[in-house]
Image (cartoon, rainbow, N blue to C red; front, top):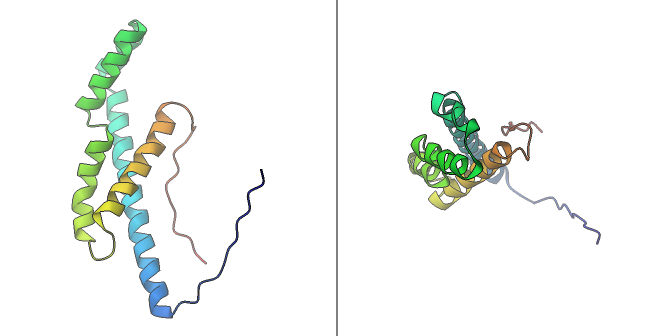
Length: 130
């Protein structure tokens, strides 16, 4: 089945473009911040002696211990939503709380791909210059 993408130019005023640009930039910064935070927590967990000692256990015990470490180092979608809440309150005129949670969940999904070796590297969103 073929997929096609139709791109249409929006007829916008200059002030509308500025608003869109501002909102997209804020969303990019929130996403990058969430991704950075979850990767710092992951790095901290991996460098712990508890994590290094898990590898010689059986699979069920390993899984249980990994889940415990995730809780200890605050690696969960819920914790990331708690992290993003103050940011969305600061930018509530531009980004709603639901959008902030969605950005946090996207960052967490990216982290999970990295964690389970479905992605080799995590990419941060960059500012697009047009």
